[in-house]
Length: 335
Image 1 (spheres, helix red, strand yellow):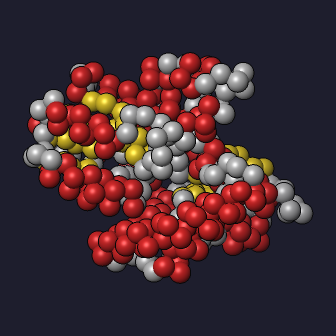
Image 2 (cartoon, one colour):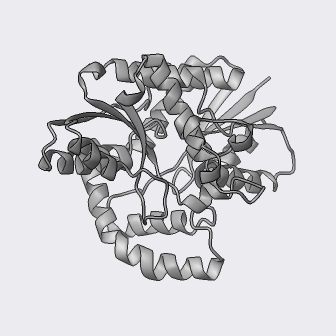
Image 3 (cartoon, rainbow, N blue to C red):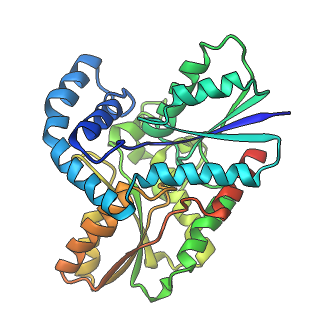
């Protein structure tokens, strides 16, 4: 039985110039699951307010990223990971990769999969914690395109793996490669979301804040991104046998104050005020190093932290194209 596995990542601009960044931001921000307002309002906000205000600064940030990696790391790592998966897997699986935004597009890649006449398609978005703006958007786009096919293979989707023990072990191993016990505190920094996105998770009209999501995942909050972030953190902390006062969870990349709290930058300030000057940062939501890890954390947060009196801020590398991560993906699809 010949199965196709499509691994999907977020994507990035093709080049670090204003035209490419504008094009990427427009596709990304016009996604209704990312900015969940009516189309006309979203069109005006994105094209006449958000992008014109952000494109120059975003382009500068991407230029910094290209200076480090000479290319898009998220694209490069996903490409290398896909090659590694094909070399490790048996003949029952053929791996393909695509980006939700920009190239290689989902449309182009699904066309290849269709022409190769596979018996089964496994769709695997590389987002450990489910969020409508990432996993939901990716699966919706895939389903929309697959629905136009004449022949339907069996289709399986993997919508989350935040608590998969192999994934937990991969991040734990990366932390262990650093002398993590010498740090004053370990900060688990996840990508932020508007509070309204997690509130929409609850069909009974309740709010995320009503569900004690900091305690982890239960039946009533099993699709809550915030709860899944805390669950991932608790599992890694348990694996490393960390004391509860040795680590905390934060959220980065906010656009306003109505996003998930606590904010990473504010938590770093608070830790400094408590005399904790050596901080290790882990970002389990990002399986590939990207702008948010390599620039936002490793450069911007670090520079600010050191200027304010901190002694050290170090980022744990992501899973990228490691062999353990590739084997974890194989284990997940075979479960």
